[in-house]
Picture 1: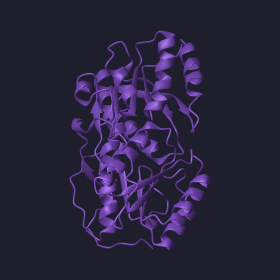
Picture 2: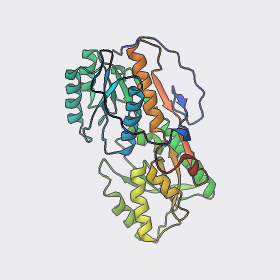
Picture 3: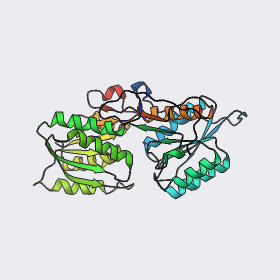
Picture 4: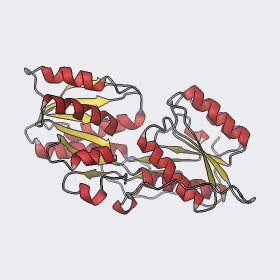
Length: 332
């Protein structure tokens, strides 16, 4: 059963594409710079609390930025963070979390490698009385967590679809790059398809991938070779997918295809600042804001203060007109 110290009645204003039950928090350009990791103080006093951070794949800059934001916020309060990397292996993640329990962590930040298969780790944490703040990808057994901090993924896809309609009012042919196994990516694609519904667009091909993105470029190369069925746009579930698509288009010399993505990484924003790049826009997330919210929520839980069980960090559209405001040297 979910452990709650206080019952909080959430009130929030929603847009048509917002995720139900979420409070939105805005990521600002001022949060853009990725923070530097500081040395841990070896002489910790008795009040120092130790948190665990377990994310699906720390080679993903998005999760690395969340971790850095969590660490910085915790260290401002004199707390410490232990980070593990299961490299997308849920069994390894479960084992690492059991090690955290044995080491006596006070709370755990978790982005699951598998939303369902992570349940044994959640049960172990619950039995040990260690609270869990779930990040980005919602676990299946949410009653075993104290809070969820995520992005408004549906809106991130929706704003991309809105921009596509404004650029292609007569419709067109679209390729979608997706990972059906990841709920957050599914929400992005759903938002995009909701935006373009009944606007004259046809999804001609779906490139479906898992953790290995290496096949995206080869599939896109093949699609571009079919001159009898030209495409007008590509919607990508995240920036790492979009980078593969941009490589394919660059090699083919194609600048007429509009590319959309969700994340807002420095690499994609740099491409967006290039007027010759096919990238048209980004449904931007704010992993820095996510990390700050997660750290403050975990501290409130341990301090037995009021906290919100669900926070949905606002997503927003970045294009060539405003990319300089957010910068290209870090996340927002």
